[in-house]
Length: 346
Image (cartoon, rainbow, N blue to C red):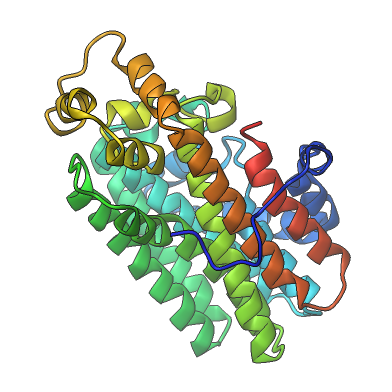
C-alpha cells in the first residue's frame, strides 16, 4: 500500500514543530480576499426562498468553524498557477458544497451525534432533513460548476462526486468484515476522502490552463495529501482529543469501522486476539474496557506506528509531486500543509 517514493519517508522533529504552526492558517491569510469571496458566494447560494430549513441546516454545518481546507486547496492551486479570473471562487464554493453534502449524508449513515464539536444536523433536526439538504447542496454544486463554462472542470468534479459515493458504498460492504485488506481500505480512502482533495487541486490547475504535467502534479499532490489526511484521522480516533478531531474519540471503534490500524492489528492477531476482534467488530458485542483493550492490542503489534509511517510516506509523495512545480510561496505552504497533516498526531 505504501507509495513508491525514494527512500524512507522521514519528518524531523524540527520539521514537525514548524509544521505545527498550522499552515492552513497561513494559506487562509495569503488567500484571504479570495476566501472572503468564497464565503460570500456560499452564503448566497445556500439560501432558499421557499424552504427556510435549507439555510438553517446548511449554516449549522458550514458555519461551525470548519477549516475550509478543500476550497483553500482549489484557490491555492489556481493562484499558484497564475490564474487571474474569478472562476476559482466558484470552484472553491463548489468543492465546499460537495464536501458539506457528503458530511450531512455520512452523519445519517453513521448515526453520528457530533460533527466539528457540535451536535450533528440529523440529531438537531432529523435524518430526512439532513439527506434532502445534502441533495440540495449537491445540486447547487453542479449549478456552480456549470457557470465556469468548462466541460473538463465539470467532468473532474462530476467524476469525483461519483467516486465519493462509490467509496462510501464500498466502506459499507467492507464494514465489520475482518477479511478487509489494506488494498480495500485504500480504495475506500481514495473514494471517500482523497477524490475530493485531488479534484480540488486539479480543477485549480485546469482553469489556469497550465501544462498537463503541472495539472497531473497537482492531482497527485491532492491524492496523496487526502490519503495521508484520512490515515491520520483514523489514528486520531484512537488517541486524539475530541477538540482536534471534532467528534468523540473512539467513534470509529464504536461504529465497528475497519480502519488501517485495526486492519494491521487483525493481520497479526493470535487466536485470542482474533476472537476479540470478531466479538467487537463483526458481532458488535462491545463492553466496558474494550476500546482500551483494542488500543493496547494495536500498540502491541506496532499497528499505530506502522500506520503513521504509511501516512508519512504519502506525505513524502505529496511533497515530491510539488517539487517539480515552479517556485511560489503557495507551493511552499502546500508542502508545509502536508507535513502538518502528520504533525497533528505528535
